Amino acid sequence: MTRIEVDRDRCEGHGLCEQTAPEIYQLDHEGELDLLFEDVPAQLRGKAEAGARVCPVAALRIQS
Image (tube, rainbow, N blue to C red):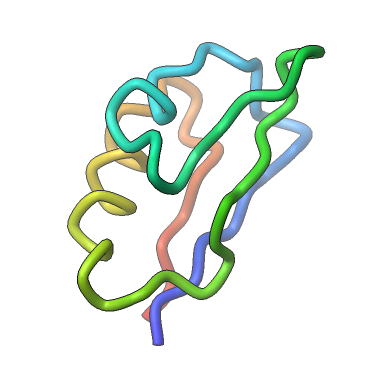
């Protein structure tokens, strides 16, 4: 199973993850990241990884 870990201390709310994979990542009205999935369905794994890769502060980590 694929899980997403967020380092909330590092996240600066740039929103690149949300732009890349809005099916998984979403910023709230205060710019805080909400995950739509913590356990990512297999068909969305590629999107989860793509969203994590574009994070400029490396706040996202994908665990298999």
